[in-house]
Structures are given as C-alpha cells and as structure tokens.
Image 1 (tube, one colour):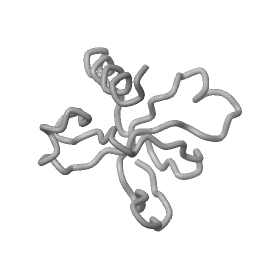
Image 2 (cartoon, rainbow, N blue to C red):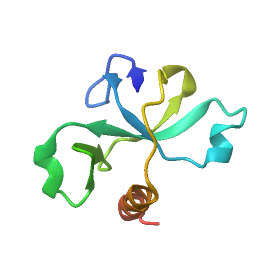
Image 3 (cartoon, rainbow, N blue to C red):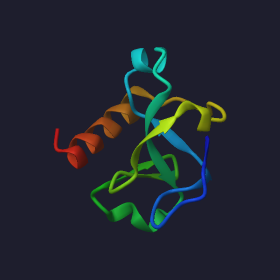
Length: 98
C-alpha cells in the first residue's frame, strides 16, 4: 500500500495498492525510490490487452508505471507467486516494448 499526494490532472493519487516491479537488489540499496505499477479495482478494464488481472484486481500498465519515493510506501501486503510474476513480466514487456 502507498499513500500518494493529491493528484494533478490525470495523475494517480491518494491511498492505493501498488506492485513494486524493480529488482530486489535495488529495493535493498540506498536508492530511495521504487518502480511500481498502480493497482485498480476497475474490473471493467479486464479485456484491455494492457491490463493484467491479479487476484480480483487489475494492474494498470497503460499509463501508471511510476517511480515512487519509498516514503510513500506504508506496508507490505503480499508477494506474487512465480506464475503471477511471470504474467506481470509479460505485461511489462508488452507495454514497455522490451
């Protein structure tokens, strides 16, 4: 979970779940930012090829891969299975053209 500042325009904001998608070695380093994908409960977007369903939530890859200061992180909720992690990796490759 992360608490983001009040949004400007179409920016994400407020308290919401996020998925950290950067390498664990960077997470443990002195770098004070993390790369995250915001999670939305808008299940109507599930048919969008740029969305990934994760335990009744949607990971929104279309525009909401952001770098976030670690100060905004509140608590760790869970971790992904290897299968779900591979699905996330595939989604990131799709949207970031990797």
